[in-house]
Image 1 (cartoon, rainbow, N blue to C red):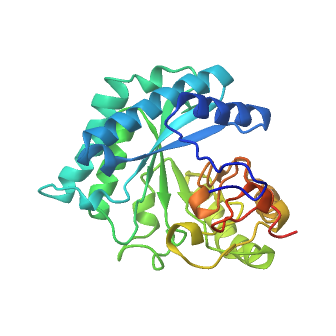
Image 2: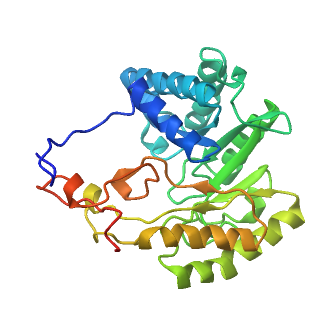
Image 3: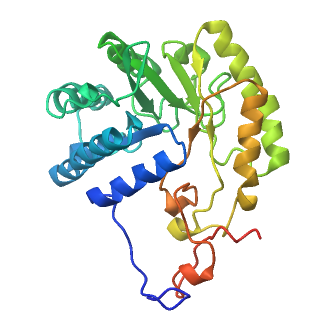
Length: 303
């Protein structure tokens, strides 16, 4: 395929060190503090080739984080863990502990990096997928996993559904704020929860404000997720440019809402997730830079 401007269409791979190097140089140039580096734990359990690939990614991320003085921390994503052959959900969750202890610490020594993120002197670990339906393990089993990481001296962030305080929505039955109180930080996954300025303001009223108040009351840290837009038409169908970026104003307004509540940190979803249209890395600005044989959202889509 060729791009609209006539040049051959090419695809990069995050597996290559020079690509990771470029990503971190862009982070430094644009004042992005660091990355939550996602590790789909089911991948490293089902295929040694996946594990070798992901471990190499870890090494590259560490090297580039140190080169460009950007923070990084590990996010264990529980998505898909239920598909791993095991005798029980407890065994599956135990595998997360094993990967951290034997692989991330014992083999790769990730937390010895000067740029591995810490909070209060404790290495940061995020566990994403807590409380979701479908879910791997009971709430008690997931709480035990969080507690285990805290016992290892970690500061634990949990990625949860936006309805984590009351239950319902994407939450597994019976899940609510009681299960979240064991974590150090709550980070609700808000991608797709609103789609424009008006609904973002509604989210601020109904979620951000009471979430923050609850966390302050309970002595838990709070880090919202914001996103620049969304569209997965190139991945599995659906509307093209489903949640428009509005020339960058959508993301800007989300940040304004956080600052209005004196929330000073956020996780931005995502660094390079072009397949869901949430990437904040450079992307095509017009049809001259996308293949002529298929659709991709561009930054000029909204004018």
